[in-house]
Image (tube, rainbow, N blue to C red; front, side, top):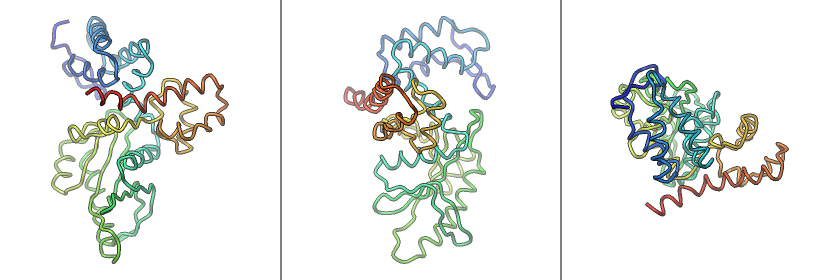
Length: 286
């Protein structure tokens, strides 16, 4: 293969294939440099015209799973976030848990009085000094981006709640409004967020502290990354508000409710433990 080689993105657009990006995504799985290099070279030799990024991802996932299932679980993080749909409510719970493990006190799905009307807020979080209002925008369609209308709408809700909230004596101030999405933002959305001082958190924004970075840094993987749990089992756990691998370790009795055998339960719990501790080991070697 001679670079540049074009691949088809999920949006249908053509883009140059990047060995560097593929290598970086494989390295985040925790696989050794030797394994990463072997997979990169294998995929490089198998490229063909009009191959899609999804096909490349699926091949990399299969090769990682063959090497070690835990690497494959980490590699499929982005897809696993999409599997928190289609309603978006598990995604709100997931964002709430991310904030909780970041040191916030969290309430999910609260109704709050605004200056003009009542609002049902996805996540209200307190960090000890002030409150933040967090609205989640979940997309199950991989081609969708958060357009400017999303931060416009969220900002108007935030300012309505903030006006009433900060006018109530004795309350800690509501100081920040956030919009969190599992996809990306358009350029207009990012520009508006910056201008309106609305914090935007997306799959790859802001650089270095994006949603994917926070998940990796905290080791807080959704149960949907599991390569051992079936879709039915994942749906059952999500319906019981178990959205994190970390939670399943504490609420392992749910596996009994699913009628999972002791041997399989042991394997699932080992997978959960490894997902929760893999990043700590990686950071220790950084």
